[in-house]
Image 1 (tube, rainbow, N blue to C red):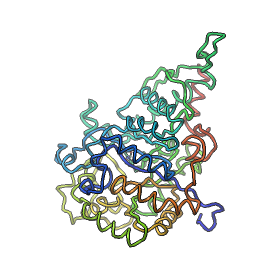
Image 2 (image 1 turned 90 degrees about the vertical axis):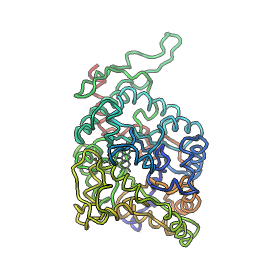
Image 3 (image 1 turned 180 degrees about the vertical axis):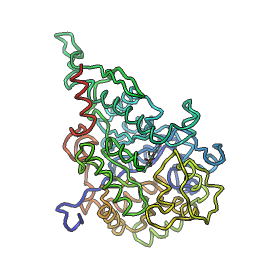
Image 4 (image 1 turned 135 degrees about the horizontal axis):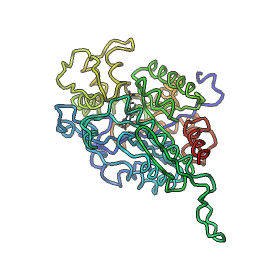
Length: 468
Ligand SMILES: Cc1cc2nc3c(=O)[nH]c(=O)nc-3n(C[C@H](O)[C@H](O)[C@H](O)COP(=O)(O)O)c2cc1C
């Protein structure tokens, strides 16, 4: 549907997309004197300033990516990644979120956590605590993790094979769904002094989850929060990954280098959601994007020229190596990228190697893109042209919003807040103030804090209550 045929302006989800690292998706910018993240990533004052900036601008959420090892795809050692700050070093974002929920009141927080290395019970308990303390502002970016170096930090020699990680992830999720949705009935926490009953035990159930990978007795040892299950984000893009996202995600991250590719991913994921018995229209999609803006188009272009000086193609090659689990530093920069077998992220190389019909990219071209703006490329423009482009991308691809990653932090977010948000607000694409309610109510727009009744989590909850 185009803007012209839309009765109301399409609301855009706007998230700030970072990690607990000095450098997330803009390799080399840690050398830019305007970047505060390179010292701030270990400093609560930096995170607080950032959170306040994006909350004042009515962003939906800060979204934290995460990984559990130092990438060592280059040369089999962490040296290269560390030296060039290739998404490392980083700090655990969960304590950062725990600190920031006390300094904000409406902003949501998305946290990445891995089904491969966490345990269902402890993860469910931690997210429940955060959701209680934040008043229902927590989302979970479900990842299966992609680094061999992470596997080695958790007692494995190498990663569990790609598709099996997703099978294990499903088993993990099923256990958490039962804990969150099924182990406590509504109204179980009665606090009845007269009958000396704090919790009504008839309303709290073991889940007795006996999966292939996880055995969890339950019940959850915390009462449910308003959302019970945090808002579920997922980014699977391989065939198995899309199926996993379609069965579980409420908000899907769609990465793609062209509008057409993103549109296909959106359609494909919706079709799989329908096959899984879900309303395909209920899924939301957000796309990673970097924006350089200023008070005019010319000022934005100037800023672009300036940050180009710091973009590092060397580090971009290291990042590509980490994502794909393959050492690209030995490849000819001017040769086309070819697909290699990988147990890391499977959805990157086909696009670069020309499997979707476009000509293959050389390693140099891929590195140049990754170094500044990501695989899809930057949006550079003043307030009106940037707002127009964002709405245009949403209309052309079917995404519901953007995970904005930064060139420098918090500068990129301050610029977006100062220049683009007011235009989007005026046009009705961003709300003038947060409506009341939980993160799920705001993102999904269903008027309910609870995950949708047609979601697998709710079906599994029924099995807990009926089997008690
Ligand atoms: C926008 C975006 C953010 C992601 N963030 C993380 C992350 O923080 N940690 C992680 O381990 N993987 C992350 N991933 C990788 C995904 O979890 C997943 O491995 C990837 O989308 C590839 O899935 P596939 O193997 O099914 O192709 C992210 C992917 C995308 C597109």
